[in-house]
Amino acid sequence: MTTTADQSRTHGYDDLPRLMGLMTGDEKHGPAATSTLDVLWVLYDRVLRVTPGSRDDPGRDRFLLGKGHGPMAYYAVLAAKGFLPVAWLPGFGTYDSPLGHHPDRVLVPGAEIGSGSLGHGLPIAVGTALGLRAQGRTGPAVWVLTGDAELDEGSNHEAIAFAGPSGLDRLHTVVIDNASAGHARPGGITARFEAAGWSAVTVDGRDHQALYAAFTAPHPGRPHVVVARVEPKNA
Image 1 (cartoon, one colour):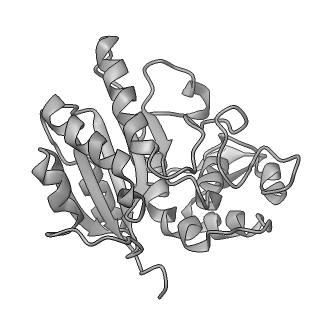
Image 2: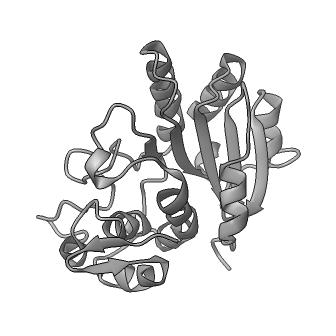
């Protein structure tokens, strides 16, 4: 595990509960705020090639938070990694804070998109991957985090159906499965992606080693999805 210097100290995974505890604003989506924590940490700590100093570098990896409602874990990880000051966290959700209930890419350092409206993240990620391909940039990876309930939105399925046959192998999707989807899918979530030509794997969304192995699994010529199962929303 790496740590990041911020305000004369370092922050690691064990600091995340304390950082999240600084955000005392009224959070309307508690399960969404906590279910993403381990996935976000493993991505920013071990996988994503982006730092506070390279967040505007054209060669950086792109991370898009489709699951923009309940962004407390996202803000905590960004603060731990030095993208934004820890001093901003107590202001979460207040009228003059840059840390709103939905991330704003203009206000939040490191945020690639403004998000929160369900069904936007994955289609935008497909467009981002296409744009990078058109520019001849084969290095940057595109990652998008969505939720199982967000897959109820039809726009996601258009993106899934397009990305597989297009061979967008720099596109990676993480689906947080906390059993909150309104529609059942025959064969489960991975089957939907596999039917469209994606590489797919399901793992324990709290197991850091399993997440890392799934995130870094080879998938030549195909986009990749990792379904991260966590405790049910209403457990």
